[in-house]
Length: 255
Ligand SMILES: NC(=O)c1ccc[n+]([C@@H]2O[C@H](COP(=O)([O-])OP(=O)(O)OC[C@H]3O[C@@H](n4cnc5c(N)ncnc54)[C@H](OP(=O)(O)O)[C@@H]3O)[C@@H](O)[C@H]2O)c1
Image 1 (cartoon, rainbow, N blue to C red):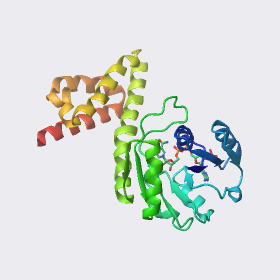
Image 2 (cartoon, protein in one colour; image 1 turned 135 degrees about the vertical axis):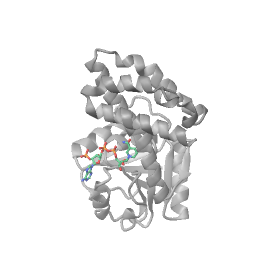
Image 3 (cartoon, helix red, strand yellow; image 1 turned 180 degrees about the vertical axis):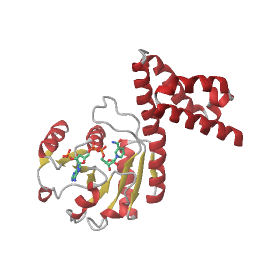
Image 4 (cartoon, rainbow, N blue to C red; image 1 turned 120 degrees about the horizontal axis):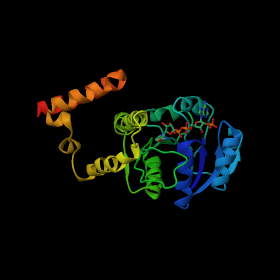
């Protein structure tokens, strides 16, 4: 398949690599900043373009991987005749593209993507086209990149995006706060890496609710008190610790 990429950030870069690996062709890369388009185009031997007037008529699929807020603005500047136009956002409606091409949809990669990634992890794709024809093309294309492809409409994709924020962005924020906590006390955060990996990997073997351990799960008020005392100098972390401990206790009281 011949693909055009609009955007040159984290998602466009990782998708470009996956697309080439799957033996499709990235024919052109456009980005708001032409230097960014040139840099990404060079990585996948594509033509960088500076304006949307230069879009190739040959491509089958045009992937708009730009910031969520930029999607409606960019959509207004596009008037495609036949090629399928998709965006890659979890929380943006499919129909923002309705006036930009007769064939449109969403190709949402349910993964945390960073351009610096050396190894591309498995990426589930949630897809949603505006017709059976578009769905068939998106299904074939997504399956060439991933073993895990599902049709998901706007409402379910938005819910899934929220779930992704909870398990990925929020846990990562806790890692960031904990890393700082360790640094302030001359503790080696890296000692916690095996624990982080073990707890995440366990999820493939069962339900999170059955895997919970720790003082809050055991109802160990003495230890919780000691920990909260240690956090007296950091009100924000103390509040978070208290809130999360109460949330764990509430969940198991209900059961
Ligand atoms: N990264 C992820 O983990 C991830 C996962 C799933 C879905 N997504 C979705 O993928 C899309 C892109 O996210 P990203 O993570 O790749 O973002 P990003 O790394 O911040 O890149 C943003 C891209 O949007 C372009 N852009 C920003 N404002 C623009 C505007 N006003 N007009 C035109 N282009 C503009 C930037 O162009 P320049 O660099 O040329 O300025 C850049 O190419 C978003 O819809 C996001 O929700 C991201």
